[in-house]
Length: 230
Image 1: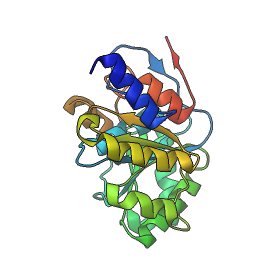
Image 2: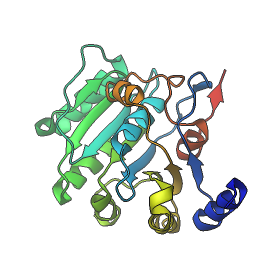
Image 3: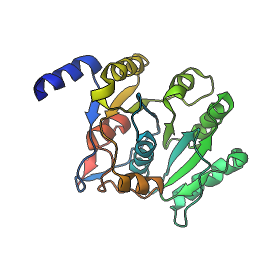
């Protein structure tokens, strides 16, 4: 099957979905969104790299005046970094005042928070997104927690979804997941290849620049509704 035929098949299966692979560095500087957006990030099948993709997305959505919130459902309690932006510290302080037991942490340009993968944890995530007050909130969940997040009262209500999927191995499963999310009115993007180890590492520290091998700009535009400059 030719590349054109494969592309047509994917388009027919997935509908209005942006498919992307990590870009080469130096492709422009992404402008962070000006209004609040909630994006859920998960994986399809055994695809790896969804946590790194969530961290990269939160870096892309952070700005000088407003830090993004990264909620890792089922993740480890984060540690603050030695260097963090003033906006990340401000968000950390607001979260700590309302959710002190969960120990939020300012990391670079992003504020991280870990919650349990149960109803109480999802409710705490919903509270954290509300506290973020209009900034980008990225919620990373394991595949088995995606449906509970969508169905649990008090959990974050996503506007968009980013799925990490290896289409050569899980195309039918990915198509089903995409169709379900589109049916809920979410914008959907699929990341076809895992980010590099360096990009994931930098993103985890909240220090991934938009020209440092992060997520491709078409995915960012679809998920965040913003563009690139430069």
